[in-house]
Length: 209
Image (cartoon, rainbow, N blue to C red; front, side, top):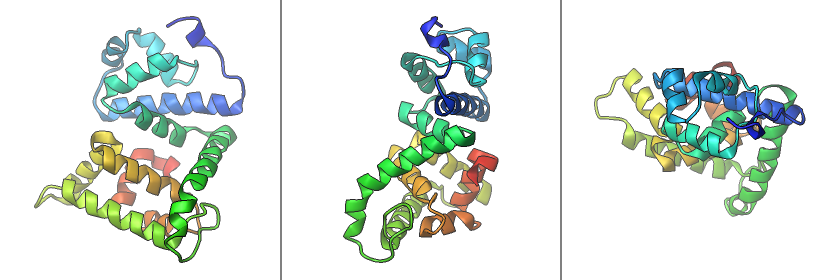
């Protein structure tokens, strides 16, 4: 790890981003049964250096984060999305708010063609959110093995949304982010007891709320 990689965060948002990244790396590593020294070796760093990153203590280089994502077997973008979700406090909320605003701008024009009720903060219609939900459920039905138990079905969904299926992962992330509008259709679906909401709680625990 270089001295450049040890730069301290400049503000609360950046500090939250570093803590979110560290939490994401630690949680994903543990869920995949990878020991810290094993992951560190794949990332060309020492276990102590990886421990500092997982603790949110330093700003790792982009190259280093890409090595971590590769070693965890997930796309770089998927790891950053997990980091954003885990980012704590006011700084984390500012990061998510900036993301919400950018996403609302990018989907508003597509959603406007669907008609129907418009979400209070997301700027998309209820019909558009229903379409996303139905599409996600349809794709997930294809990855669940026939005759699977509830637990096996949730495991298959978990792997898909974590990035093993890029199409499902991208759609799930769009659903999850639009669900932050508490007045919206998708927020209501993720508050219900269904396989997708249960997997979301497994991934994020208290951060799912």
